[in-house]
Length: 221
Image (cartoon, rainbow, N blue to C red):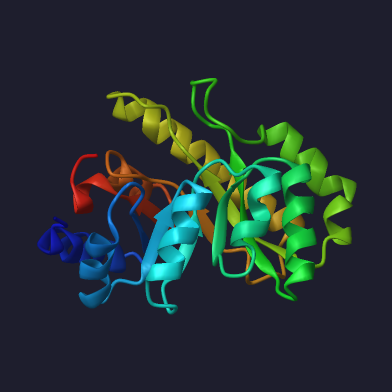
């Protein structure tokens, strides 16, 4: 059962800094999401396409759905009609697939570019260097149905808060560089999605505009 008291505490804490909360509802039943919805929360994150589609079909249509997991290009078509934001875009191939599906549905799909900041090799994302090369190449100018609204990253899974802070600070600095060099006059480039249940308070201090919290609200999986 969701902890609605904790939900309100976290939202109050984040609102003081203008930070959005994505409630990570992966593996949780529709009934749990409904409880948060009726408590006034409407932003939810899922990491599996099939589960996201199933929940979208069952729940109110004013919910803002975020795809927060690794997304395969051949599965974009299933979420393209309704997804609000795709967090983990980690290749130009995926961007092109999202653009293609956006065109089919006559909508522009907002995306965050995922940066690899963690020490674990299993985490996805662009390196700083690769993303700078992509943005400088001008390839994105050919994509008319995607909109880059910011960056996303996941810190190393560690109890070393100094390491986590260092990684968040690096991506926040890179975010400012990218914004200045490539998105200076584009107000929609404004999101830095960093911070989860175990490290969101550090992310909040290091410039996050959006955190993804699941277990603190829904309980352990």
